[in-house]
Length: 195
Length: 218
Image (tube, rainbow over the protein chains, first blue to last red):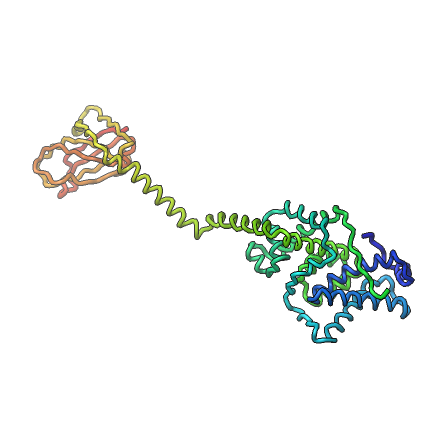
């Protein structure tokens, strides 16, 4: 995705409904919101609801409430709106189960299956990376990301410490990132509700 | 939180692995939405993780095979850990000893053999006799001509490797006469090549030397 500066000009284009800017805004912040929200909300449907609500409120402030004071802090503004939406979701209905701060990450079997991040090209790129990884690294990734094993347990199994585990994950992810980037798969575009 | 601190502390990976405590997570998210570099790293990291999960789900057999290979490798290396290594080596050593006894030592003892009738005389001015020992056999025989000044019921024979140590001390067995031929069957492994002295003493008088013999083994 083309990197754009979040400045007064960007916010102005977004405010007046420039299609290209809206597409970039939805794509860039849509992904970040998805990553942030799905760590806090179990249901993919509620994640999407919270994401759309965040977009709606941000655009509402920009278009109907006089905009924001510091356009260069657009990202921080989006994040704070999302935090408010989250708090309201947690408070508003007992249907929404807020996770305690220190709770373990919930096992969401379908989190990635429904993810717009997953495509055939990216999977092929990741598959190539996995094929070239050492067995140990492949098994670490499997235990962490699919089996959702406790990280201390993984460290104990491979007789490594948490820092080294993070280094190995970092290296593997870096290789995946590069391979995915080379696959030139365009990033997903999120929809903005209420346009 | 600024970008430099986030980079130095590996915060992107910690965030993706859900390792950040709540306050640090909130601080990083505030930075993340404003920092295009961290934003890209988190996005591409999350994309990688989601695709990794999918590939693992698509190919459970391969993943399991990898796990099995890993387990196999671990089991193999586990043999070299001390708790396993000691009994394993002990068992291997025992097997070697048993094989040697059954296939080399015992068959050589059971093999019929003609003993030499060469008799070694007490020390004289002549050159010491040279005895050739077949090292393939565990035992070899030596014969000594003993002529005691008087009869003793029992004698001791002490073999010394010249200039070194006593290699063997043994009884002659009960004797009825003062003169006799002492036929001995000796273990070959105790007698490396060298010049030997054998001293015969009465068992009851260990300070008395009755006769001394010299010979060379090769």
